[in-house]
Length: 212
Image (cartoon, rainbow, N blue to C red):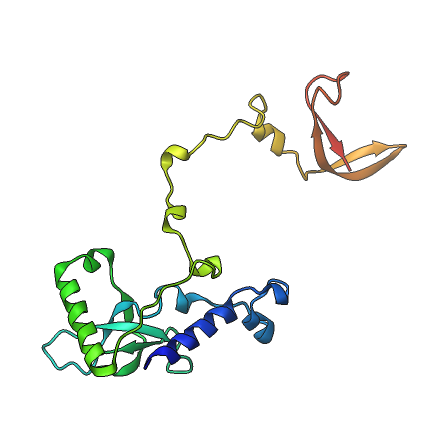
């Protein structure tokens, strides 16, 4: 319960960045600010996700890379890309040097042990932590399916040739070219707009162009 205010702020931020049918499929933030929404701060982490941050208070020679949990974006604190992080002692701080934990680290025994110790300390200090489960009825931007992004090279299909008998270099070099044509005793400036083939001009040989 101690951290649910951060969850409420996070949900409000997400809804402000999601297009709404009530606003002509525009996000509320875009309507109010008249600027394109920047979602960069919300793409790397989810609520209460384990992460590493740089803890300047750790004395030398101990490692300053410290385990924490992500509690959302800290607005109007320092520069952009600044986040609320909960430390192992239950203190919530704002840090800009934060990075996600790799899949290899998440499956390592040492990390599982450190995360268990971290959560036990949070439970003793602040009570039960946050168990965040995104319901399936939320907008798709919050329910990304990783399998949908998997690309199988065997699914690749060679595109069919558009006009295999055409010489595209010859076809393109006249397009947009400027030409001078005689017309009723005068010379008119024209521009090549389209090329005609034997099917369009059966009485002619070769390829011809249409000038505008």
